[in-house]
Image 1 (tube, one colour):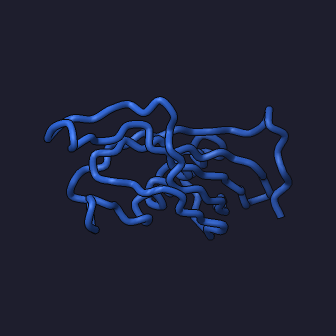
Image 2 (cartoon, rainbow, N blue to C red):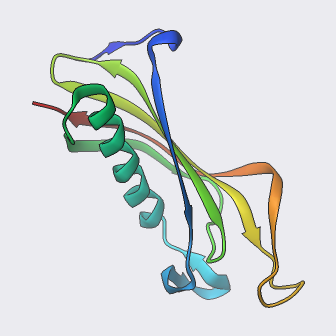
Image 3 (tube, rainbow, N blue to C red):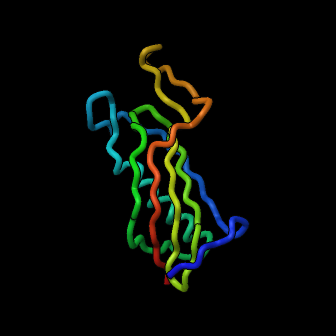
Length: 130
């Protein structure tokens, strides 16, 4: 069982990604929740490389919460924070935030940086490393 880390010992990685129109699956240019989960996997891989020198293997997600929509044209900021460490297991806290959003009401390519990011998806997960 992983032991919780003190805040000073936690490690965070940050990824940003533009969501292209090709990922819109639903009316209103909505993107499925799996898009953020895939980004969580990428951030977890970097976190494992930085902390353990290995890509690690994802074992499970728990407490996945879809809190706000993600749309084509958004820019997502994904964070992965190592919150607990075991002999081989690592607990990671994830968040996906919309930091920029397309504004089709203003023009075909209009967009804006949001003053306050919108939390779209949160989760915790477990990875294992050799």
